[in-house]
Amino acid sequence: MQALSASLKLARVTAHLCVGWWTIRMKFSQLSQAERELRVQQWADRLLILMGIRLVVQGTPPAHGPVLVVSNHLSWLDIVTIHAARHVRFVSRSNVRHWPLIGTLSTGAGSLYIERERRRDTLRVVHHMTEALCNGDLIAVFPEGTTSNGTLLPFHANLLQAAISSGAPVQPTALRFAVAASGETTHAPRYVDDDNLVTSVWNTLKAPPLLAIVRFGELQHSAGRDRRAWARSLRADVEALHRATH
Image (cartoon, rainbow, N blue to C red; front, side, top):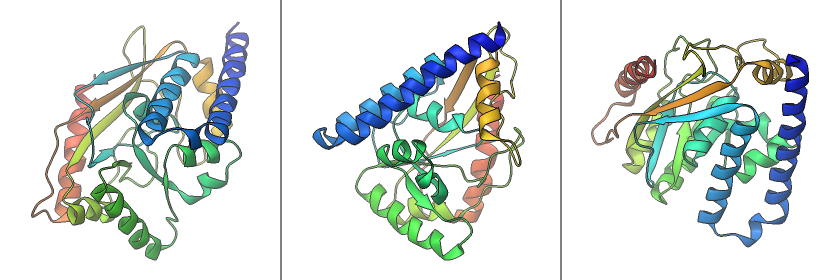
């Protein structure tokens, strides 16, 4: 029964992904930026529902930009969860752009791409992030640089320069996935190191009903900040927010 339920969810999720792809390719050119953002948020919220996941938003999402959202990184599900709470532009690995179907969805949602293996590419991305923040965008980054098993890794400071250069505030944010019935943390959506994406998705679909908890902290202004010291401080803030989701 568990496998049958997961298979039915997978069929609905696949259909929803295709609807998203079609909407981006055929409809987005006719929509305003605000309408596109709303469509992305609604689509992400619906995707969580189809996977048997209930969104729990704690704190106050940013009402408008410019804001740089800084979050811990646990899974591929993080992006869907934050999008469902508030549309933002993510900074994603460059190879995501070329993934079948997913690449179109990511690009349509406004992602900025970075080649993490090339240090010089960070300067290019920071420049584009700064421009976007100056234009009033909401941008989200995962300063750990990769997913973790729940224990926060050190935060890289480079991308914080975009907030300092643009004068945009930063909002620390924490994510946690839990079993809906007990509130206990679940690692079903785990996607760390050598984990396989297909297996991670299947484990998520097989899991009992889940909660996707996203907790937004208070805005922090960037004036006079040293980015490395700020990165250490933000890591502690995100860690405290994560504890508060329990």
